[in-house]
Image (cartoon, rainbow, N blue to C red; front, side, top):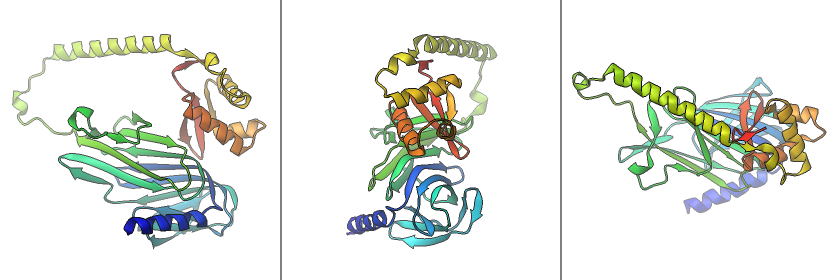
Length: 302
């Protein structure tokens, strides 16, 4: 019965939000602070307030529209919380939300589990989720469980120098429910008997030399084996080739909003072609300010 009610609620939300069209929705979750940051590029809105629904309970939210602070209402909904932010804008504006959520991480048989659901109730060209693991935590090794460690599978991992990052970049369909999880463990444990641990300095130096040699060899191999971008452009359409030529002329990087300003294409056209190039693995897209930074994948020579 609960699933039927949630499905009905999602259908209602889908109909009520069809007049809202999003170019991008980018969510960042920091598990160290349980802080959620949402950056949204709205293409079209026909109501007097911007609605945002979360499957988690929200008590407080800091919000801005086009960089200006705005007071938003928070109401309980059948699937969590609904935020409504008043605005007179109707096309091409940004909404930024920041709030805290609890109970995103649970423990199961000594394993920490992050779980998050996002329901797609309005047309969205691109959806990204970045999860920052807590300090001292790592992604669980696959040999320690029979379950898939990260889901869905089309993810990338990285680091900010202190914490591990997991990123997804998706093109969701209206009505989808996106379910994410990460299995992780705490790697901050200290030795039980520090006095019994004796590490020879020469071993450390030798290990560092070996590691640096392996890194140098790996970098050399990576550079040597990179694919020629021109050979991979043959199956692209002319618009995609023009976009890549723009990036090649600018050392392989460009802001998406600058492409819109400088090329004779609409914002929606650029967004669609960029999404296809990202899906093909030719471009990488990351958030930079209010726009997306586009860069040619490092596996190509250009």
